[in-house]
Image 1 (cartoon, helix red, strand yellow):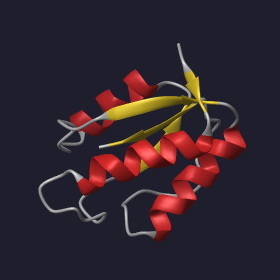
Image 2 (spheres, one colour; image 1 turned 180 degrees about the horizontal axis):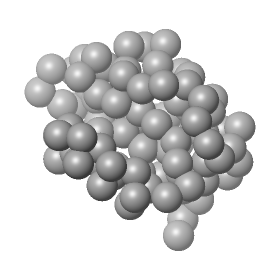
Image 3 (cartoon, one colour; image 1 turned 120 degrees about the vertical axis):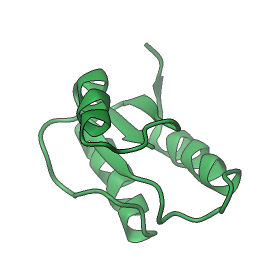
Image 4 (cartoon, helix red, strand yellow; image 1 turned 90 degrees about the horizontal axis):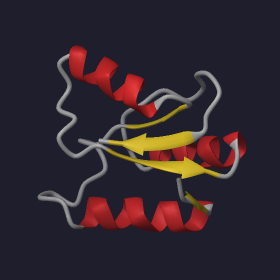
Length: 91
């Protein structure tokens, strides 16, 4: 497991969005979780398209929440809050 710093994760997410079909934040979802595989399955079971799923191990829960808030403010879907977090994910 490779833990990346907050700025590098933000940069990678920015790159994924910019290189997507629409270069738009609104179709994307951002979230935090301690169990990304379980969370991915939950989203899939809810009928969401998880084809572009990517998760990153984070340094701290605060970093995860900061990353989540940053992308929510740019228009990504998701809910601030939730449980503890060892990972941040997008899809």
